[in-house]
Image (cartoon, rainbow, N blue to C red; front, side):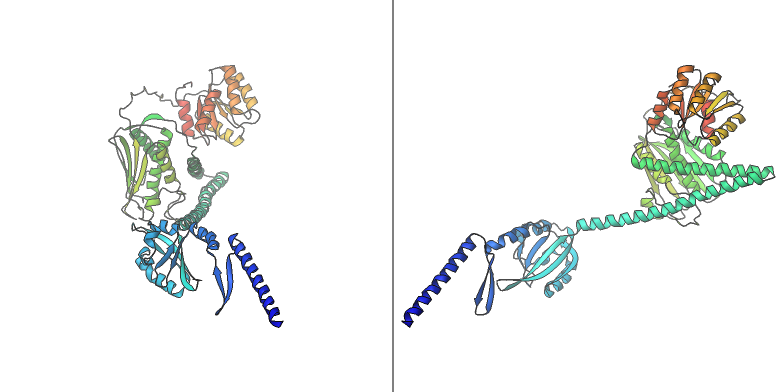
Length: 537
């Protein structure tokens, strides 16, 4: 009976095991099992099912990094498609061969050490079948599959990371340059403001005409410097935003150069330098004010960096279909490392506070932008520090010289005297404008707002009305429209505006203005406009 009981128990055990086996088989078939743990003579062993490996194989194949399985000797057992793309050859050609043929020779010893250790990382260069090198990060790890030990190599393309590093370094350099620029801006603004403040104090306390004269000269010189400084800053900003608009006319570059040199001579800025000019007529279609700005900035740069007694030569010539302007000096020159970036914003050679040459270093940036807007190019050259420099501007030249217009002639008496109404809400500006014009012999009347200005214009019928655009009550455009509707063309209307874009000028002309002057108004420019014959637009 005992034997029968034992047999029945054995049968039940076998049935239970069969049921467990069938359940396991069902689970395997339905994908519910990834691996089996089986007790064997050497203890429990893990057996991974091939169906369970599929998601991991897909993952490896879709990785953005190259993945390679290696023997200890460095032979390739497997590689994914990304690694094949990196080296430029199919996986079938890679598998079975040594990994070294895809690694730069100088990097092979380091990789061999990492493979020997079975783990580690290092940056090196991958070698493609075309001979190109790819900066890469090599990461090595060890794994065991079915009792066999293998090495896994993951290769990360560092090209994008390198670009990010370079961009970060450039951004940090730009930020540092901007901080230095702002520090220098404060320095450059305080200098003329300090001189003006001291000169004003001298005017209030001086007892000698000579001291008064010298104080006025200082105020005039430093005001001119501030005006130029602010103008360059604003123009650089407009240029960066694409807001500079050109008013093109046909001009002779040689004539503009001579005019600029006359201006510099009259201000005695050329007194301590030997300046020579070789200029032949070359005609271009360009914005005359902007071409003058280019020439003046380049001349100022040469004067700034050429010691007293130094020589500056200005050349204008035609080369095929280009107008060429060259400014050559024997000054301090440009170092080789600075030369490629001399036109970049916030770039200067000497940034020390006690440097000999003042300025913000935005002038050459503005020159390049203005030249490019005219369809030209500008280049800088220098044999080195202390050996001078050459700046060359090339602009598209016109084929034929235009027919010369009949020039207007100014009488020897200067600006014709007349009745002028100044409509300006800023009391100081209005007073200075009145003194300037009264000194030239004009009869001056004033108004501090638009409504009063219109009333006085109708009452006085002046030959000229100077109108500030930013007036309280009604703005300068409306003032011009009302005066024009009442007096028609009997008065010349001149806009005084802080807005210098072409659309601002056009808006002024549409409102009835005859001329448009940008603030701060240059006294010489104002007198020249008053001197010129009136032309209705």
